[in-house]
Length: 377
Image 1: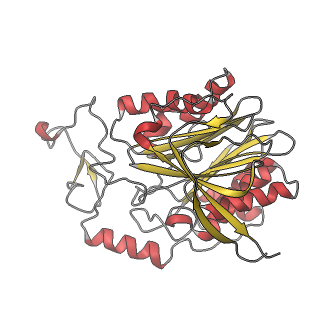
Image 2: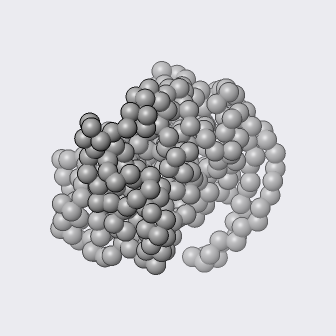
C-alpha cells in the first residue's frame, strides 16, 4: 500500500456522530494510527487486533515523540514504555509498565494477555518475558531523546518531579536524599490541600507527555481499548503513569462502551476516569456527559492539571472532553464515512455542553476536518 494523500476540508460545527457498527476513535491527531486500525477492521480483524495495529503504528512512527522509542527520557536519559490492551468482550487485560529495551510495547501487552494469567508486568522482568515471547531487544534511546536529556542536565535538571529532598530539586541535579524534619523550611512546605503544581511548576503540557489511547468496536460488536506511551519526560526512573493501569488509561466493556485518557497520569490515575466513564455509559448516560462526570472530580481537586478523554458507546456514538489545553484533537474512523476524521474541540466548552447519545448529530462545539484519502494499492 502506498502512502495516503490527504486533502483537508473544513466542514462545520454540527456533524454526524458516527452511527456505524464499526468504529475506531483515538486521542491526538495521529491519523496514520487511526487508518492502521481501520484497515485491520476492513479485513475482518478483531477489535483487539485493530487496537494493537493502531497503537503499533504510532510506536513505529514515534508519534509526537511521546510514543515508542527515542522519546521522553527519564532522569538517567533512558526511554521506557507503558502500554495496555483490554478485551471488553472477555474483560481480559494485558499491560506492561516501565518496559525496557523492547520497542513494541502494545504487542508485548497483548502477549501478557494472551499467554499468561497475569494482567500487568513491569521493568526488567517484563523485558525478560518479552524476549521469551520472541520480541527483540534494542536500545530505546535515540538522538532526539539523548538531546533532550542533555538539555535537561544543562538546565540544572529542570523541570524536576522530586520534592522534600536535598539538594533543592528546583535548583539542582541529584543525587538526592530525603530532608529531615530539622532541614525543612516550614515556609517552603506545600499545604496538603494545595492543587498539585504539575502543569505550572513542572511545565507539563501536551508536548511533555502524550498517550495514544484507542477504542475500537469491530464488525461482531466486540469492543477493545488500549494505550501506548513512553511516559512523562524527565520522570524519576521507575515511574509508571496511568496508561497501563486498566480503568485509568483506558477501559472497555461490551454492552457499555469504552473510554481512554491522556494527560497528567500521576493525577488522572487517582480517579480511574476511564472506568468511571464506562460505568456511566453502562447506566445509560451518553458518552460526553459520562466523560464530563468522570473529569469533574479531577478538575475539582487538581484545577491546573492538563488532560483529555474520549469515549464511545456500543451504538457508535462518541464524545470527548479536555481540560488545561486551549483546544484538543482526536481522530475517528467509522462506517458513516470512508475517511479518517480529525476533530477539534474547545476545552472550556467541552466541559459544559451536553450531548445526547441518542441524537442523530454530535452536538459538541466541534470543527471536523475530513481527510479525503486517495490510496494506492
